[in-house]
Length: 274
Length: 154
Image (cartoon, rainbow over the protein chains, first blue to last red):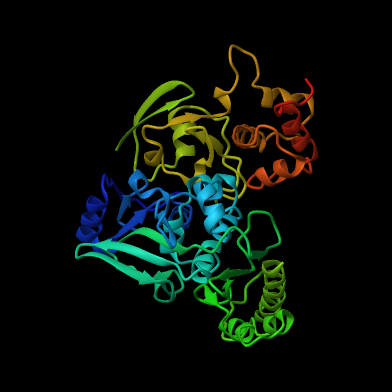
């Protein structure tokens, strides 16, 4: 399969990248690792006229201590998250989720910022970022702005990022090396989750997010409220499908996904508490 | 556009369309047909090569993204006619049947062993998650990788 023809431009700085996407607008797509965009282009579900390759902006690849949070450059690869000792110590849940994305080849290329900017509700990392109440730093022609996790994911493959903005950094709160669980249900190795559940203790609360239960990664708000009200884990997990809008496809019906959400959230809560 | 990269120690340079995938570049421009196109959707891993020492699926990477990189394909593993230890282990442990997945399996295994020199069986099975084999049931492939690992009996 061959993508539709496009013009390829390599950005040599973040300013250059922003100038290029500002110039080409909706005709341009930013290319990071390409693990989501290139398959879409090969299937011609995406046909950008201009591809702006930001993959060589190495100054956007880092995991550093930001005080009460960990700052991660948008072009940090899943592999780099997987082996980051800082992340393992300060935000173990994100390290653990990154280590389960795709397969080693995908993790050698795919980036945290690329996954977030793609906004796929079936992807693992966006749900982890939603569970963590991550903040996103985006740069555009008018300067830099901060986007909250609750604002970031707007719809299926749709985020709050403007066409002329470049996601530069993701900040996650320090939540420690343990007290989390990621439950991913699929039928074959390396597949996307049919449903996934992330539970993480952040501050004094237990946050829960769902993979592939709607048009965006979702917080399981009813579960969190039940937990905050003192409900036992098994009782809280029964609310896992509340407020969701899961898809039906060849892998699972709506009802099966709702069932999976309840089971996986229960398992995630038990494991995070253990 | 002009791309140049080192492939198996040799500098290669060609004019390509921007949409040229790395696997097409290796097979059609460099004539290195050891790397196979299987699913062409980054699922099966038959097209796995090393880019700067790490396994990637070359059907899902633009040649332009590999511009300037150091690429190793299955043809680049043997030295002076002697098989690489992973190739030798696949041979000795009968880690293949039809052979279509083998180049990708070997390249993924080389990358895995560079990251985990002495893996457990579970490490190998997880580490080869991105490579499909429809013949062997994986058993002898896993045995091959374990036999090629650091500290394995010679």
